[in-house]
Image (cartoon, rainbow, N blue to C red; front, side, top):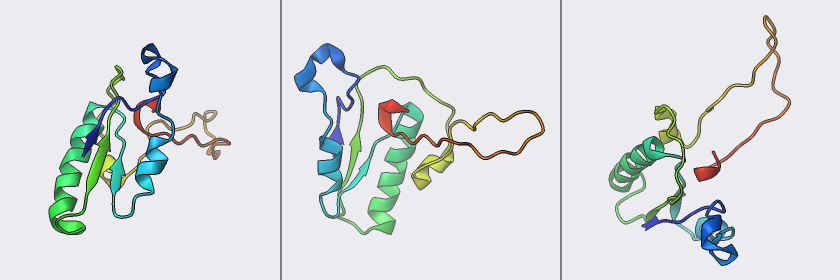
Length: 113
């Protein structure tokens, strides 16, 4: 399945067209694997991974879905770790010579990346 117009960033469509609950609803459906790529590169990787998993990993017939945004989003460098379900897009900056752990961790999916 492919869903479009996913994002609260679609303000031009008005407040009644800002989906906020649909991802939780879709992810609550037993057996449905939902993927929400951030850009064109992640969409291509997600599509390839869905086809691979549909035929080899989860068994034929398991439904998958892509939730895509309509808004213009930046395209980041392709990262094959997207096939694993997540990766680090930007590392936290630390002062020169220090190896400090970040104090904040931001996690995002889809157009919010």
